[in-house]
Image 1 (tube, rainbow, N blue to C red):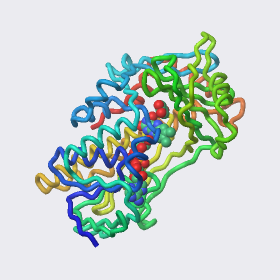
Image 2 (cartoon, rainbow, N blue to C red):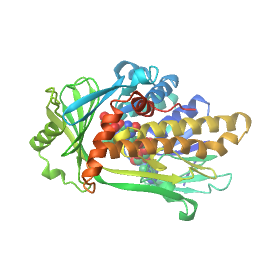
Image 3 (tube, rainbow, N blue to C red):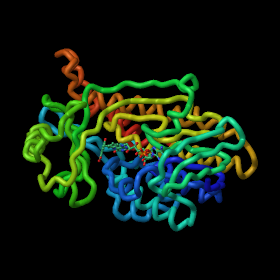
Image 4 (cartoon, rainbow, N blue to C red):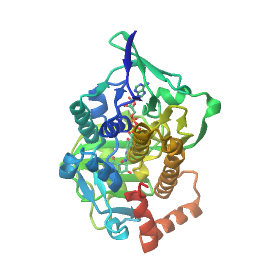
Length: 394
Ligand code: FAD
Ligand code: PHB
C-alpha cells in the first residue's frame, strides 16, 4: 500500500472540495484532493449557473475571480412571470447594490482546477473504493485505489466534500446523524441551447401547465428548465415538443419568448430538500451537498458549498496558526444557521412557483396572490432580493 501524508484529506473535487483546497492553500495548509470521476466529467457536467454576490466576492478575494469578472454576467434583477405578464424585481435597488453573477459551475470548476495545478498541490481524478477511518481519533486516514494500487492518506482532518451520494456521510453510524428532508412531486427537465438569450435577466414563470425558467450561460447560450414528472422519460421529449412547451409556459402577453436553437444537452433533475446534522463528527467535516441539498429554484446549492468551505478553511486556519479549536467547534452550528435560511428560501421559491397537482382552487388563488404580493410590495421584494443575492456571510 502506498502511504501518503497531508494536513487535510479532501474527498470530492466539486466546487466544495476544489474551493476548500484553494482556500487552505492560501492559508499555507497542505491538502490532498481525491475525486471518483474524471476531470473531464466534473468540468463538463451542466449544473449551477448563479453565484451570489458573496460567492463572487469570495472567488475574487481568493484570486480565482479574474475570468468571472470578465465573462460572468452581473444581473441586478430577476423577473417573476405569472398570468401572462413579467414583473421585474430590482434586487440591486432593494439591497443597496447587491447582485448575482451568471457564471456556469463548469467555469468555476475550470478556474479552481487551474489554481490547484498552479499551487502544485495534489489533486487526483478517477480514484476508486474510497473509505474513511479513525475520524474520532487524532489520526484519521483515507484509503482509495488509483490505477489498481491501494493508497492510504494519513491526515489531521478529513473534509467530506463528496456530494449527496458520497461515501463520507454514508460512513457515519446512522445514530450519529439527524436527517431532515422532503422530496417534491415534480422535477426539472433542463436544456442548454445554442440560442442568444432573448432577455438580459432570468425569468421564473408559473403557468397553468407548470413552472418554467429562462436562464443563460453566455451571450450565445440559453439555459431553460421545465417542471416535469420525477420519473419523466426524456425519450418522450423530442426537441420540438420541448420548444413548444417552453414557449407555452414562458411567453408573455407583451410578445416576449425565448429564442430557439440547437439543443446541446437535455437532462432531468429531481428536487429535494435535505439536511444531515451535525456537519462535524470528530475530525470529519461535511461540506456542501454531502451535508445538504436544496431544490434548485432558489439557486443556492453551489453558494452553500462556498459558504461552508469558507467557514471550514477559516476554522482550520485558526487551528494551525494558534492551536485554537473554537472555530472548529462552531463550524457545524454556524454553517447550519445559513443552510437552514437557504432551505427555507428554496422551499418557499419552489412552492410559490410550481404547479402542485395536490393543490385545490383555493391554493392556486393563494399562490397567485403571493406572486402578486411579492412583485408589488417593496418589503416583499426586499426580502426576496436579500435572500436571492445571498444573506451576509458572517
Ligand atoms: P458536488 O458538485 O456534487 O461534488 C461532489 C464531488 O464528489 C463530485 O465530483 C463527485 O463525483 C465526488 N464524489 C462522490 N463520491 C465520491 C467518492 N466516494 N470518492 C471521491 N469523490 C467522490 N446551485 C446553485 O447555487 N445555483 C444554481 O443555479 C444551481 N442550479 C443547479 C441546477 C442543476 C440542474 C443541478 C443538478 C444543481 C444545481 N445547483 C445549483 C446545485 C449545485 O450544482 C450543487 O449544490 C453543487 O454542485 C454542490 O457542490 P459540492 O462540491 O458540494 O458537490
Ligand atoms: C441555471 O442557470 O442553471 C439556474 C438558474 C437559476 C436557478 C437554477 C438554475 O434557480
